Length: 116
Length: 114
Image (cartoon, rainbow over all chains, first blue to last red; front, side, top):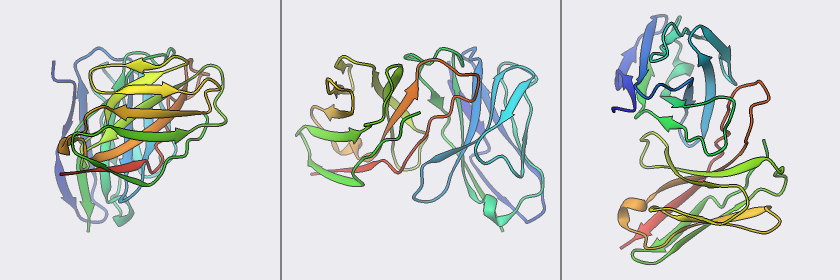
Protein backbone atom coordinates (compact mmCIF):
# COMPACT_ATOMS: atom_id res chain seq x y z
CA UNK A 1 0.00 0.00 0.00
CA UNK A 2 1.86 3.04 -1.27
CA UNK A 3 -0.78 5.62 -0.35
CA UNK A 4 -0.74 8.72 -2.53
CA UNK A 5 2.13 8.89 -5.01
CA UNK A 6 3.10 12.04 -6.89
CA UNK A 7 5.53 12.45 -9.75
CA UNK A 8 7.74 14.25 -10.54
CA UNK A 9 9.05 15.53 -7.23
CA UNK A 10 10.90 18.45 -8.83
CA UNK A 11 10.38 20.17 -12.18
CA UNK A 12 11.63 23.34 -13.84
CA UNK A 13 9.58 24.71 -16.72
CA UNK A 14 9.98 27.61 -19.08
CA UNK A 15 7.14 30.08 -19.40
CA UNK A 16 4.61 28.83 -21.91
CA UNK A 17 5.51 25.17 -21.63
CA UNK A 18 2.94 22.59 -20.64
CA UNK A 19 3.33 19.62 -18.36
CA UNK A 20 1.39 17.08 -16.32
CA UNK A 21 1.79 16.32 -12.64
CA UNK A 22 0.87 12.74 -11.94
CA UNK A 23 -1.04 11.51 -8.91
CA UNK A 24 -1.99 7.94 -8.10
CA UNK A 25 -3.56 6.30 -5.06
CA UNK A 26 -3.97 2.62 -4.32
CA UNK A 27 -6.56 2.88 -1.56
CA UNK A 28 -9.69 2.80 -3.77
CA UNK A 29 -10.55 6.33 -2.69
CA UNK A 30 -13.50 8.11 -4.28
CA UNK A 31 -12.28 11.60 -3.63
CA UNK A 32 -9.09 13.09 -5.06
CA UNK A 33 -7.91 16.65 -5.16
CA UNK A 34 -5.03 18.96 -5.99
CA UNK A 35 -3.77 21.77 -3.77
CA UNK A 36 -1.05 24.32 -4.23
CA UNK A 37 0.97 25.85 -1.46
CA UNK A 38 2.86 29.08 -1.85
CA UNK A 39 5.62 30.17 0.55
CA UNK A 40 4.34 30.91 4.05
CA UNK A 41 0.76 30.14 3.12
CA UNK A 42 -1.74 27.41 3.67
CA UNK A 43 -2.99 25.05 0.98
CA UNK A 44 -5.45 26.21 -1.66
CA UNK A 45 -7.68 23.84 -3.60
CA UNK A 46 -7.20 23.79 -7.37
CA UNK A 47 -9.47 21.00 -8.65
CA UNK A 48 -11.14 17.97 -7.20
CA UNK A 49 -12.86 14.77 -8.29
CA UNK A 50 -15.52 12.67 -6.60
CA UNK A 51 -15.12 9.67 -8.88
CA UNK A 52 -14.03 8.53 -12.31
CA UNK A 53 -15.32 10.90 -14.96
CA UNK A 54 -16.37 13.59 -12.46
CA UNK A 55 -14.26 16.66 -11.77
CA UNK A 56 -14.91 20.19 -10.61
CA UNK A 57 -13.10 23.42 -9.84
CA UNK A 58 -11.77 24.49 -6.49
CA UNK A 59 -10.62 27.85 -5.25
CA UNK A 60 -7.82 28.55 -7.77
CA UNK A 61 -8.50 26.57 -10.99
CA UNK A 62 -7.28 29.02 -13.64
CA UNK A 63 -4.40 27.72 -15.73
CA UNK A 64 -4.94 24.10 -14.73
CA UNK A 65 -6.83 21.20 -16.20
CA UNK A 66 -7.72 17.80 -14.73
CA UNK A 67 -9.34 14.57 -15.78
CA UNK A 68 -10.17 11.34 -14.00
CA UNK A 69 -10.42 8.33 -16.26
CA UNK A 70 -9.77 5.79 -13.49
CA UNK A 71 -10.35 5.66 -9.74
CA UNK A 72 -6.61 5.48 -9.11
CA UNK A 73 -5.25 8.38 -11.17
CA UNK A 74 -5.85 12.12 -11.11
CA UNK A 75 -3.34 14.05 -13.24
CA UNK A 76 -3.02 17.84 -13.12
CA UNK A 77 -2.14 19.60 -16.36
CA UNK A 78 -0.55 23.01 -16.64
CA UNK A 79 -1.67 24.27 -20.01
CA UNK A 80 0.78 27.15 -20.51
CA UNK A 81 3.06 27.59 -17.51
CA UNK A 82 3.45 31.02 -15.95
CA UNK A 83 5.85 32.20 -13.22
CA UNK A 84 2.81 32.68 -10.95
CA UNK A 85 2.39 28.91 -11.01
CA UNK A 86 5.69 28.39 -9.24
CA UNK A 87 4.57 26.51 -6.17
CA UNK A 88 4.47 23.21 -4.33
CA UNK A 89 1.62 21.00 -5.45
CA UNK A 90 0.00 18.38 -3.27
CA UNK A 91 -2.36 15.65 -4.33
CA UNK A 92 -4.78 14.33 -1.73
CA UNK A 93 -7.40 11.62 -1.49
CA UNK A 94 -10.03 10.29 0.87
CA UNK A 95 -12.36 7.33 0.88
CA UNK A 96 -15.68 9.12 0.69
CA UNK A 97 -16.72 12.55 -0.50
CA UNK A 98 -20.16 12.41 1.01
CA UNK A 99 -19.45 11.33 4.56
CA UNK A 100 -16.60 13.30 6.02
CA UNK A 101 -17.02 12.12 9.57
CA UNK A 102 -13.68 10.74 10.57
CA UNK A 103 -12.71 10.39 6.96
CA UNK A 104 -9.02 11.11 6.87
CA UNK A 105 -7.49 12.89 3.93
CA UNK A 106 -4.18 11.45 2.78
CA UNK A 107 -1.63 13.69 1.09
CA UNK A 108 1.18 12.95 -1.29
CA UNK A 109 4.71 14.18 -0.63
CA UNK A 110 4.44 17.11 -2.99
CA UNK A 111 5.76 18.24 -6.37
CA UNK A 112 8.01 21.31 -6.46
CA UNK A 113 7.44 23.28 -9.64
CA UNK A 114 9.49 26.28 -10.76
CA UNK A 115 8.47 28.27 -13.82
CA UNK A 116 11.19 30.56 -15.20
CA UNK B 1 -17.13 25.55 7.20
CA UNK B 2 -16.23 27.54 10.29
CA UNK B 3 -13.03 29.58 10.42
CA UNK B 4 -10.27 28.82 12.89
CA UNK B 5 -7.76 31.01 14.70
CA UNK B 6 -4.38 29.76 15.89
CA UNK B 7 -1.30 31.48 17.30
CA UNK B 8 1.37 31.85 14.63
CA UNK B 9 4.14 30.24 16.64
CA UNK B 10 4.93 28.39 19.86
CA UNK B 11 7.98 26.88 21.48
CA UNK B 12 8.12 23.79 23.63
CA UNK B 13 10.96 22.09 25.49
CA UNK B 14 11.79 18.58 24.40
CA UNK B 15 10.10 15.99 26.59
CA UNK B 16 7.45 18.39 27.80
CA UNK B 17 3.83 18.49 26.72
CA UNK B 18 3.02 20.80 23.81
CA UNK B 19 -0.43 22.39 24.03
CA UNK B 20 -1.61 23.98 20.82
CA UNK B 21 -4.81 26.04 21.04
CA UNK B 22 -7.38 26.67 18.34
CA UNK B 23 -10.40 28.92 18.36
CA UNK B 24 -13.42 27.98 16.24
CA UNK B 25 -16.18 30.06 17.78
CA UNK B 26 -18.53 29.76 14.78
CA UNK B 27 -18.46 25.97 14.60
CA UNK B 28 -21.74 24.24 13.76
CA UNK B 29 -23.18 21.15 15.37
CA UNK B 30 -22.24 18.82 12.53
CA UNK B 31 -18.71 20.09 12.04
CA UNK B 32 -15.68 18.13 13.10
CA UNK B 33 -12.37 19.49 14.32
CA UNK B 34 -9.35 18.04 12.53
CA UNK B 35 -5.67 18.52 13.21
CA UNK B 36 -2.98 18.03 10.59
CA UNK B 37 0.69 18.87 10.66
CA UNK B 38 3.23 19.63 7.98
CA UNK B 39 6.87 18.89 8.59
CA UNK B 40 9.26 20.96 6.54
CA UNK B 41 7.16 21.17 3.33
CA UNK B 42 6.28 17.48 3.30
CA UNK B 43 2.68 16.55 2.62
CA UNK B 44 0.31 17.34 5.49
CA UNK B 45 -0.13 14.48 7.91
CA UNK B 46 -3.34 13.65 9.74
CA UNK B 47 -3.05 13.71 13.54
CA UNK B 48 -6.47 13.45 15.14
CA UNK B 49 -10.07 14.58 14.87
CA UNK B 50 -13.11 14.97 17.11
CA UNK B 51 -16.70 16.13 17.27
CA UNK B 52 -17.69 16.64 20.90
CA UNK B 53 -15.76 14.33 23.15
CA UNK B 54 -12.10 14.40 23.94
CA UNK B 55 -10.08 12.04 21.81
CA UNK B 56 -6.73 10.31 22.17
CA UNK B 57 -4.62 8.26 19.81
CA UNK B 58 -1.02 7.18 19.61
CA UNK B 59 0.10 10.59 18.41
CA UNK B 60 -1.86 13.10 20.45
CA UNK B 61 -4.88 14.06 22.50
CA UNK B 62 -7.61 16.46 21.48
CA UNK B 63 -9.50 18.42 24.11
CA UNK B 64 -12.69 20.14 22.91
CA UNK B 65 -14.44 22.60 25.19
CA UNK B 66 -18.03 21.88 26.17
CA UNK B 67 -19.35 24.72 24.01
CA UNK B 68 -17.12 23.45 21.15
CA UNK B 69 -15.84 26.95 20.46
CA UNK B 70 -12.23 26.03 21.04
CA UNK B 71 -9.95 23.04 21.26
CA UNK B 72 -6.42 22.11 22.28
CA UNK B 73 -4.11 19.62 20.66
CA UNK B 74 -1.77 18.01 23.16
CA UNK B 75 1.47 16.28 22.23
CA UNK B 76 2.25 14.62 25.55
CA UNK B 77 6.03 14.28 25.22
CA UNK B 78 7.26 16.50 22.43
CA UNK B 79 10.36 15.47 20.53
CA UNK B 80 12.52 17.38 18.06
CA UNK B 81 10.74 15.52 15.24
CA UNK B 82 7.47 17.16 16.28
CA UNK B 83 8.75 20.52 15.03
CA UNK B 84 6.22 21.37 12.32
CA UNK B 85 3.36 23.63 11.32
CA UNK B 86 0.14 22.44 12.94
CA UNK B 87 -3.18 23.14 11.28
CA UNK B 88 -6.53 23.16 13.04
CA UNK B 89 -9.37 22.67 10.56
CA UNK B 90 -13.12 22.58 10.94
CA UNK B 91 -15.09 20.59 8.44
CA UNK B 92 -18.74 19.64 8.12
CA UNK B 93 -19.47 15.97 8.47
CA UNK B 94 -21.62 15.54 5.39
CA UNK B 95 -21.14 16.92 1.92
CA UNK B 96 -23.55 19.59 0.79
CA UNK B 97 -22.78 18.57 -2.76
CA UNK B 98 -19.76 20.78 -3.17
CA UNK B 99 -16.06 20.14 -2.82
CA UNK B 100 -14.55 18.61 0.25
CA UNK B 101 -12.36 21.61 0.77
CA UNK B 102 -10.20 21.60 3.82
CA UNK B 103 -9.43 25.25 4.52
CA UNK B 104 -5.84 25.43 5.65
CA UNK B 105 -5.00 28.69 7.36
CA UNK B 106 -1.51 29.71 8.37
CA UNK B 107 -1.36 27.24 11.27
CA UNK B 108 0.95 27.29 14.28
CA UNK B 109 4.67 26.81 13.84
CA UNK B 110 5.68 24.60 16.76
CA UNK B 111 9.38 24.53 17.52
CA UNK B 112 10.57 21.89 19.94
CA UNK B 113 13.73 23.04 21.66
CA UNK B 114 16.45 20.69 22.92
